Every structure is written in structure tokens, then in C-alpha cells.
Image (tube, rainbow, N blue to C red; front, side, top):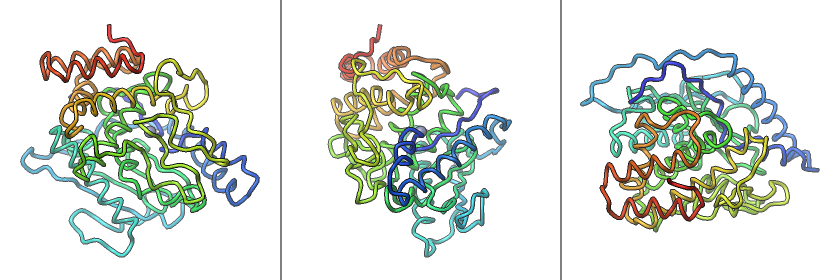
Length: 354
Ligand SMILES: [Zn+2]
């Protein structure tokens, strides 16, 4: 594992600002109000985070034989102060609050995938305690990793439901922590879209691993179950068919491309980090489903090797990343079907590997 002397955490929300912008323009104040408040909060956090100096990884030593998660769930009681009141700590029994219990389980499922499949002890590889706050703010329509902990809103119930509902959203946000401690991909343009894609890939794998699903059984959606019943859509993103997750009068249409032919050049959303992530997302989906079986074993291992291998630099382009996955496939699996599946996946989405 690489040690990051100078990483700069980014404020990563699961719902990007361009989506909330759209909802904030709704005629109905019941819909627009919570979206505006969520945007105001997130804008403040983005600025605030840039001014905050985050020191290196906490020195938490855990023996390799003794690896288990160290979870603490806090309740913000609908206020904005973090972390809030401690309501569940590691090893304690489930309580009455299903949101607290889902957050606890989601943190555990994330820890399990990284430890049991990839031998990684928590987010930083050194047993980082996992802290999460639920019931953040009033009607807050987002979830985020702030560089130090997870935060979940309850949603407004009109557009978004409780953000602890989809386990892949929890996995997505915590994977931003893994990226922060490893390749530390710059959160802008193509490296930013790779950063987003890493979170979708491992978020989906955490869901698949916890449900025991094969690549063929998985839904390959991000955030299924998060959209309220009135919304026309199935999820926030689709790795299987980017651009098809939702098409709604309030939320707008899923803007993700699946291939480089439809690459979106934009200054919004940090240069389209949540938009063009559809391209590497789809490449992962293609490689994983071509190989079949458990997606975390082959395609997931190759992607993990690149993320943590030390050669993926912070400004990497899609093509840089694609070349590294080809090299990683060869290193780990020789010239077998894995290499062919990876080459073909990138070819199908139009990203060169040489
Ligand atoms: Zn993200």
C-alpha cells in the first residue's frame, strides 16, 4: 500500500449538484425546498473542506490476526453538527432505529469485502475506525464521506428516501475513503470520473458480495431503492446500461454515456465526474459479465490491484487506467480469458489500451 503524505480529501456526495439543481427548479416548493437546502449545505461543505487541513492516517495499529471493524454510529437528531450522539458501537445489539442498524450493517459489509476478498484492513488498510452519522439535518437529500466519516440524510420522502437504504451507496461513499488513501485520484475530469467509477464498482461489489450474487444475478444499479415512488426511475446510475437509470419530470434524465462516442464535455459536476464515470463503469460491467461467476474475484481483483498498486497516478486518464488494468490482468492471470475480457471491454467502450 502506498502511504499518502499529501492527500487532499474531497467532499464526495452520492447525489451530484447538477441533479439537485434540477430538483431545486421544480415549481412545487415541497420538492424544491429540500433540494435547495441540501445544495446550500453541500456548497458550504465543499468550500469548508478545502480550508481544512487533514493530517495523515490515524495511527491505529491492529494485529493482522485481530482484524475486525470498529464501528460507531451517531445520531445527528436532524441537526447539522457532527458527529452527534453515539447510538450504537461495535458489538452492541441492534436497536429500534432501522436507519442506525442499516448504517451499521452497511459499514460491516464494506469492511468484509475489503478484508475477506482483498486482505485490506478497513479503509486505510490499517484498521481505521468506521464512523457514521445518520438523521443528518432536516430532509437532507444526500449522503457523503467527508474525508473522516460517513454522513446520511433521511431524504425528503418526495424525491429521495432514507440514504441508508441502498447498501451500495454506503459502499460507494466508503470507497472514496479507500481511493483517498491509495491512488488519491484528482476529483476533476477523467481522473475524477475514475474516482467516481471506483466507488460505483466497489459499491456494487459490496452489494453483490453481501447478497452472494453472481455477475449474472446482480442488478448492476447504483442506489436502487433510494428514489421515492413518485420518481420515474430505478436508481441513480446503471453500470449495465448507463443513461437509463431515470427519466423523470422533476429529476431530469440520467446523463451518463456508456462509451467514448458520447463523452460529455462539461465544466459542471467537476468536469462531469458523475457523468463520464458511466464509461469506465460500463467497461467494468462488460469485463465482469464476460467472465461470469463472482465479479469480485477476477474483474474486481484486477481493478483493486490497479487502485492500490501504486502505479495509478492522481491525474490518470481513462486510457492510463485501461492500460494498467490490462497489465494487472496479465500479472495476476497471465494470458488467459481475464486478459481478453479486459481488452474487449475497453474496446467496446472506445478507450484505447495501447
Ligand atoms: Zn461519489
